[in-house]
Length: 136
Image (cartoon, rainbow, N blue to C red):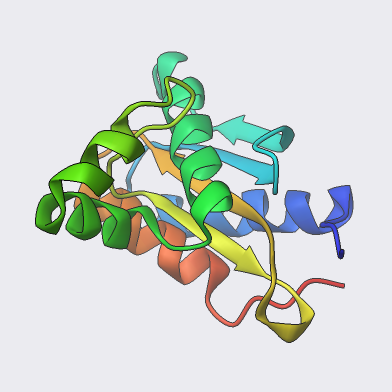
Protein backbone atom coordinates (compact mmCIF):
# COMPACT_ATOMS: atom_id res chain seq x y z
CA UNK A 1 0.00 0.00 0.00
CA UNK A 2 1.36 3.36 -1.02
CA UNK A 3 1.35 6.23 1.46
CA UNK A 4 1.65 9.94 0.97
CA UNK A 5 4.91 11.59 2.00
CA UNK A 6 4.95 14.61 4.29
CA UNK A 7 6.65 16.53 1.48
CA UNK A 8 3.75 15.88 -0.88
CA UNK A 9 1.25 16.70 1.87
CA UNK A 10 2.91 20.10 2.32
CA UNK A 11 2.74 20.65 -1.44
CA UNK A 12 -1.03 20.15 -1.33
CA UNK A 13 -1.29 22.58 1.58
CA UNK A 14 0.75 25.18 -0.29
CA UNK A 15 -1.28 24.69 -3.49
CA UNK A 16 -4.59 25.04 -1.64
CA UNK A 17 -3.47 28.19 0.17
CA UNK A 18 -2.29 29.75 -3.11
CA UNK A 19 -5.59 28.95 -4.83
CA UNK A 20 -7.54 30.38 -1.91
CA UNK A 21 -5.46 33.54 -1.94
CA UNK A 22 -6.18 33.99 -5.67
CA UNK A 23 -9.89 33.78 -4.82
CA UNK A 24 -9.51 35.95 -1.71
CA UNK A 25 -11.05 33.10 0.26
CA UNK A 26 -9.75 32.49 3.78
CA UNK A 27 -9.46 28.75 4.34
CA UNK A 28 -8.07 26.00 6.48
CA UNK A 29 -6.52 23.05 4.67
CA UNK A 30 -5.73 19.63 6.12
CA UNK A 31 -4.07 16.66 4.45
CA UNK A 32 -4.67 13.24 6.00
CA UNK A 33 -3.45 9.72 5.35
CA UNK A 34 -5.81 6.87 4.47
CA UNK A 35 -6.72 6.44 8.13
CA UNK A 36 -7.64 10.09 8.59
CA UNK A 37 -4.53 11.05 10.57
CA UNK A 38 -3.22 14.55 9.88
CA UNK A 39 -0.01 14.77 7.86
CA UNK A 40 -0.03 18.54 7.24
CA UNK A 41 -2.33 21.47 7.99
CA UNK A 42 -2.46 25.25 7.80
CA UNK A 43 -4.92 28.10 7.76
CA UNK A 44 -4.76 31.42 6.01
CA UNK A 45 -4.75 34.65 7.99
CA UNK A 46 -8.16 35.52 9.35
CA UNK A 47 -9.52 31.98 9.23
CA UNK A 48 -11.25 30.80 12.40
CA UNK A 49 -9.29 28.06 14.24
CA UNK A 50 -12.33 25.71 14.22
CA UNK A 51 -11.96 25.46 10.45
CA UNK A 52 -8.92 23.18 10.91
CA UNK A 53 -11.13 20.61 12.62
CA UNK A 54 -13.84 20.90 9.98
CA UNK A 55 -11.29 20.51 7.16
CA UNK A 56 -9.82 17.45 8.90
CA UNK A 57 -13.24 15.84 9.22
CA UNK A 58 -13.99 16.44 5.52
CA UNK A 59 -10.62 14.98 4.54
CA UNK A 60 -11.08 11.98 6.85
CA UNK A 61 -14.43 11.13 5.24
CA UNK A 62 -13.00 11.42 1.75
CA UNK A 63 -9.99 9.26 2.67
CA UNK A 64 -12.25 6.62 4.22
CA UNK A 65 -14.55 6.21 1.23
CA UNK A 66 -12.22 7.25 -1.60
CA UNK A 67 -14.53 9.81 -3.22
CA UNK A 68 -14.96 13.58 -2.97
CA UNK A 69 -17.27 14.67 -0.19
CA UNK A 70 -19.47 16.43 -2.77
CA UNK A 71 -20.24 12.98 -4.20
CA UNK A 72 -20.72 11.57 -0.70
CA UNK A 73 -23.40 14.22 -0.08
CA UNK A 74 -25.23 13.08 -3.24
CA UNK A 75 -24.91 9.45 -2.17
CA UNK A 76 -26.36 10.29 1.25
CA UNK A 77 -29.20 12.27 -0.30
CA UNK A 78 -30.17 9.44 -2.65
CA UNK A 79 -29.85 6.58 -0.16
CA UNK A 80 -31.22 6.97 3.37
CA UNK A 81 -29.25 4.04 4.77
CA UNK A 82 -26.02 5.30 3.18
CA UNK A 83 -26.75 8.76 4.55
CA UNK A 84 -27.16 7.41 8.05
CA UNK A 85 -23.90 5.51 7.78
CA UNK A 86 -21.97 8.49 6.42
CA UNK A 87 -23.29 10.76 9.20
CA UNK A 88 -22.70 8.25 12.00
CA UNK A 89 -18.95 8.71 12.43
CA UNK A 90 -18.25 11.81 14.53
CA UNK A 91 -14.77 12.20 13.02
CA UNK A 92 -16.33 12.69 9.57
CA UNK A 93 -18.15 15.74 8.18
CA UNK A 94 -20.59 15.23 5.33
CA UNK A 95 -20.13 18.54 3.52
CA UNK A 96 -18.42 19.37 0.23
CA UNK A 97 -14.77 20.34 0.59
CA UNK A 98 -12.91 17.02 0.75
CA UNK A 99 -11.22 15.05 -2.02
CA UNK A 100 -9.07 11.93 -2.11
CA UNK A 101 -5.47 12.02 -3.26
CA UNK A 102 -5.02 9.20 -5.73
CA UNK A 103 -1.73 7.39 -6.00
CA UNK A 104 -0.38 4.92 -8.54
CA UNK A 105 -3.02 2.53 -9.80
CA UNK A 106 -5.85 4.81 -8.69
CA UNK A 107 -5.53 3.82 -5.03
CA UNK A 108 -6.28 6.60 -2.52
CA UNK A 109 -3.25 7.57 -0.44
CA UNK A 110 -5.10 10.06 1.71
CA UNK A 111 -7.22 13.15 1.20
CA UNK A 112 -7.31 16.92 1.36
CA UNK A 113 -9.98 18.85 3.24
CA UNK A 114 -10.82 22.53 2.89
CA UNK A 115 -13.04 24.61 5.20
CA UNK A 116 -13.58 28.29 5.70
CA UNK A 117 -15.86 29.49 2.94
CA UNK A 118 -19.12 28.39 1.45
CA UNK A 119 -18.94 24.67 0.82
CA UNK A 120 -19.10 25.20 -2.95
CA UNK A 121 -15.96 27.37 -2.77
CA UNK A 122 -14.28 24.82 -0.50
CA UNK A 123 -15.08 22.04 -2.99
CA UNK A 124 -13.83 24.03 -5.98
CA UNK A 125 -10.53 24.74 -4.23
CA UNK A 126 -10.02 21.15 -3.11
CA UNK A 127 -10.82 19.76 -6.57
CA UNK A 128 -8.28 22.06 -8.17
CA UNK A 129 -5.76 21.25 -5.45
CA UNK A 130 -5.84 17.50 -6.09
CA UNK A 131 -6.53 17.59 -9.85
CA UNK A 132 -4.20 15.20 -11.64
CA UNK A 133 -2.67 14.06 -8.36
CA UNK A 134 -0.42 11.05 -8.37
CA UNK A 135 1.93 11.22 -5.44
CA UNK A 136 5.44 9.88 -5.32
